[in-house]
Length: 240
Image 1 (cartoon, rainbow, N blue to C red):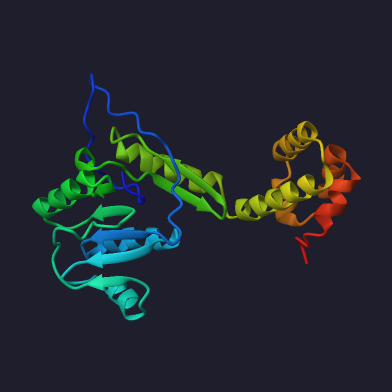
Image 2: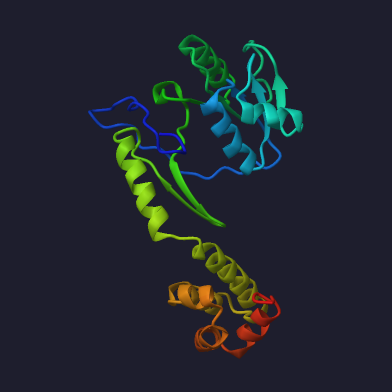
């Protein structure tokens, strides 16, 4: 399963059930990542990596127009040639996205032999990680994977999540982030902090935040956390 929710064949089965993957979000900011391949699929992978803050190197004789533009802007490093042994050296993560199965397999073998996480597009059985279908709303990331059992279902669920979690959730998460800072500043007791933060997360404030309804938000914050928390939250200047 790739980040667009497009089909990938099922992974290796154990007793008729695919592997139970360990779900994690990787911090790739400033870390080197390699994409082998220069087509449309590689371009999508590169964009996802760049959005994560990775320093991306692309190895490919030719580039998709989007990648060529990035290379001209020096937003990526481009090696205009085919893959060579040793290209994986020093990389935190590798993606093999060529249209040649033999090359992809070579990349996977070298990466795994050097303990480097590798994803072979459309071939989870050669990958040490797979990429789920993801919905991003600011700081909120919702990931769906069926472990290769039904990529079509993963894509369907992603579309449903996109409808359920609209752009208003980005502002709501920023409010909760600011509220957390306010609680940490105003409430010294750890147990009470936890109760207040849980109460704020469970309060139905999504619509109020979207409307910037300060009166409703203030009433809820003071009811849950007290006036000192609201006073600290005011310092965040959320709606100015």
